Length: 214
Image (cartoon, rainbow, N blue to C red; front, side):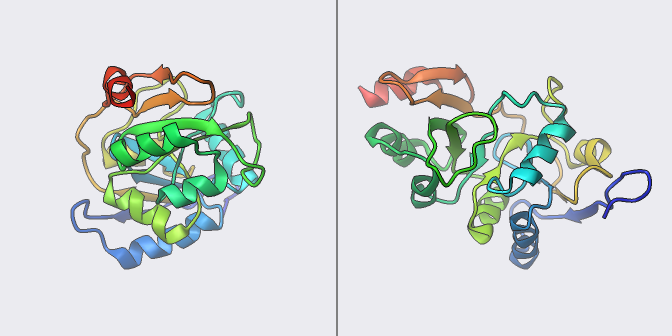
C-alpha cells in the first residue's frame, strides 16, 4: 500500500539463515508470486526480487534501482526443469548447471516465448545455494528476479541493517538474515553463441569453466 508520500509500508522479517522458518518463507513466496517486491539474502549479496513473469513488478525494480532498461536482470530458479520451461537450455548449459549449480554461476541463454520480453531476448538464470533464496524459488514456483539490492552503480549490500536503510519504504518485504559473508556477485557466462563468453568474473573462475567443458 502506498501512502500519500508515495512510500510503501515495508514488512521487515528477521530470518535465521541456517534454520529458516519455512512457514514464513511460504508466505513470502506467495507474495512474491503476486508481484510484491522483496529484498532477500542470496549466496552472494542481498538481492532484490519479484515474480520475473510479472512485467509491471519487474518495471518497478528498474525504477527503484534507477537501472537502465537496456540492462538484463538475472533470475533465480529452483531447478534445471524450471530453467528449461523459460530458457533454451542446450547441452553446454545443462552440463554447467549439473556441475556448478546450486552456486554463484549465472548462465545467459535465449529465452522461450513464455518468458516476457522486457528489454532483450535473453534468459539469465542460476540456482541459488542460499537456502532462503532457494526455498523462495521452490515455494513460489516462478523464476524470481535476482538483481543485487543496491541502486545502480552503487556497491552490493551484505548486511540486513544496510538493506533496511536503503529499501525501507520502497519494497513490500525485507528478509533480514543479518550479515552475509562478503562474496563477489555471481560469475556470468553468455552461452548464446558457439563459444561461451565471460560477461562478469565472480566466485567461479572462468578458466575453471572452460577446463571443465574441454
